[in-house]
Structure formats: structure tokens, C-alpha cells
Length: 158
Image (cartoon, rainbow, N blue to C red):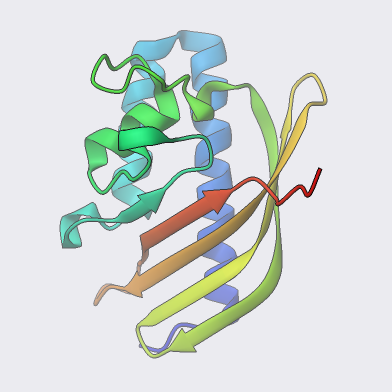
């Protein structure tokens, strides 16, 4: 039941592939289909069924900085929710590639914490590199679910 490095890589890859799928669906089919894909993505990779997910996305702030509910996470990824008026839909920005680079990981039986950098590349060559930490819980069926997601832009001393 112990989580290993390969499973962490697979979990990060699944997250990146999910973001790309949301983006491609939005570009080809619009917001309704993108929301459906994003909703399934959240069910697949996040552990909302276990309780609140400690979710702090990159571009959130004020009273809506933290998103422990599936509804808050869905709005962050696809926007179009009047409850979260500042959300522009991070997942619908035409992402084509997602890469991760590990700084360190903590593994303890059915819980793991990963920290590193995630780079997203868009269809027009735009990139964003974020500092990322994910906490995972391994379920009895072997699936890893994100229970902590913290993301921020790198520190800039200027």
C-alpha cells in the first residue's frame, strides 16, 4: 500500500493530462463541455470524497484564496461561476503541455507530499512556471488522490 516515486510521477502526469484535456475541450467545444471534463477531472484526481481538499490555487486571492470545496476548485479551473467573480478559468487557457520537476518528496505508507515546479506551455508558446506542493492519499483501490494542492508564483525580489 506504500506510495512510491513512480506513482507520484503518474499522479502528476494525470493532473497535467487533465488540464490539457480541459483546455482542448474548451477550445473545440466550449464551456459546457469543458465544465463536464473538469468535473470528471476533479473526481478522478482530487479527494473531495474524503473531505475538504486543502486547495490554494496559483491565481486566487482575498476571501476566496482557499478552495476546500469541489465547487471552488471547478470554478478556478473553468470560471463562469458568479460565486467566484475573479476566476478566469486557469484550465481553459489553451494549455498544450505540462511538465514537472521534483524538488523533494516525503513518502509515508499511504500518504505522500510532493514539492517542485510545474511548467505549463500554451498554444501560442506562452509559459507559466509555478511553485507547487501536492499532498496525496492512496485509497484502498490503489488510486492516489490529491488532498493538498498549494500553488504560487515564484518569489520575485524586485
